[in-house]
Each structure stands twice: as structure tokens, then as C-alpha cells.
Length: 101
Length: 170
Figure 1 (spheres, chains in turn green, brown):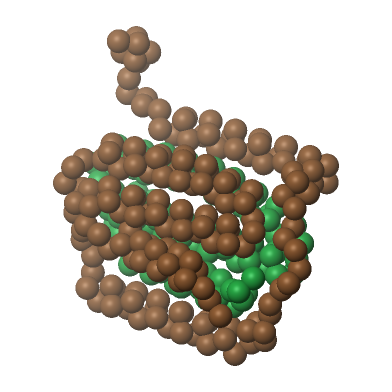
Figure 2 (figure 1 turned 60 degrees about the horizontal axis):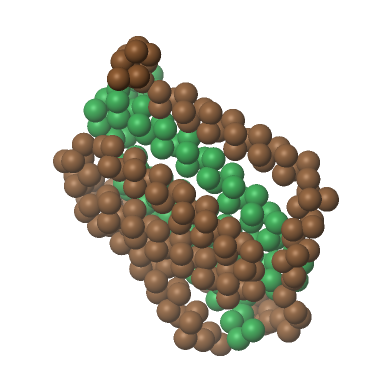
């Protein structure tokens, strides 16, 4: 392998930082889900990279479980976005006021 | 050092991640997110994990991205192109992003990870399959239950309650 472990980890850090930026700045609910997806993917990249360099197979198994759980999370998140859109006719999260108390 | 395929993949992944968050139209944004997820699948192929790469392609690019596209198309047209954000919060967010990249990046570059190379052969993906059905089989069953429960929950949440059943049939 010509690529070292550190290259993959640096790409993963960049993706994590972009995801945190999207999660903290954007007010559109669907764009915030994009940020969550990027963070989950950077974690998966870390898992598989460390599993390749140790080497064992448990990291890949954990990455597979993580991908499946992320699929469930996105399905529920998009259903919540649709419900909120039906109630408020908007997907701007600053308009979702009834949960704020 | 890194090779050309790695460089191209990282430019594709990071670039389309930025495009997904910053482009005005949400539809193009979700297509760019699809590109990011395919780039991650390419990294998995570089890491000799073809099973995880194919799983990533079929689950993320195949189902999640299509789900996001359909949800975007259910939303009103002017909301898709609408982009309201606070200028000051945006600059603070960019600062936070750069601080995270530089901070964690410096820590990682300074650590002993730099010298970590491997010449060992890759893990056989047959072993992952047999692990799933033997050692991890209880976890696999629990994961299937979680998936089924979340899909039923999503259907229940998105169901319209102001329609009666005979309206639905028409």
C-alpha cells in the first residue's frame, strides 16, 4: 500500500469539520441532515482505515453495522422533516417553535 | 506518499461535500452528496474492503440519496431555492471549521501515526461474512429489528391523519 494511515485520517478530519460546519450554520432541515451524513461517513472511513492497518476484520464489521443504523436514522429523520413541513409549511428550523417551550 | 487515485478521490469527496452544503438548489445539493458518498466508497476500495464499499454504494447511493431526493421534491418549490442564513453565524461557522481542521490535523500529524504503514495482506471478505452469521448473529438480528422498527416508525410518522381511508383509496 502506498497510502499511509495518516492520509485517510486527514481526509476523515476534513469531512468531519465540513459536516460540523453544515450542522452549525445551515437553517434548512434537509441540509442539516446532509451534515449528519458527512459526519457518519467520516467515522466509517476511520473505522475501515484503522481496520486495514491493524489488521483485523472487526473494524469492517462495525462499519457495516454503522451504515445500516445510519440508513434507519435517515429514514426517521426525513419522516420528521415531512411531518414538520406539513405542520409549519416550511423547513426552516427556526420556525419550528412548538418544541422550544 | 499518496498516489494519484487517492488525490483525485479526496478532491472529489471534499469538493462535492462543500458543494452539497453551499449550492443554492437542494436538488443539486443532494446529487453532490451522492458524489461524496461514492467517493467514500472509492476510499473503501483503496483500503481493500470491497464488501464494505459495495454495501456503501447500495445503501447510501442507492437508497438514502434517492430517499433524500424524493423528500426534496415533496417540499414547495421556493423553499428548495431559498437560502436564509445569518452572516455572522456563517463566518463563525467557517472559523470553527478551520479551527477544527487545523487543530485536529496538527495533533494527528504530530502523533506517531505518520510512520504507520502495512505490508500485511488484506482481510478476506469471506471471513466477514462468516463472522456475521456466527459470532455476530445476535447483533445482526437486533439490527434487523431496529431497521424494521424504524421503517414502521417512519411510515407512521409520515401518515396523513386528516384523510379518511376511502379518500386514500380514490
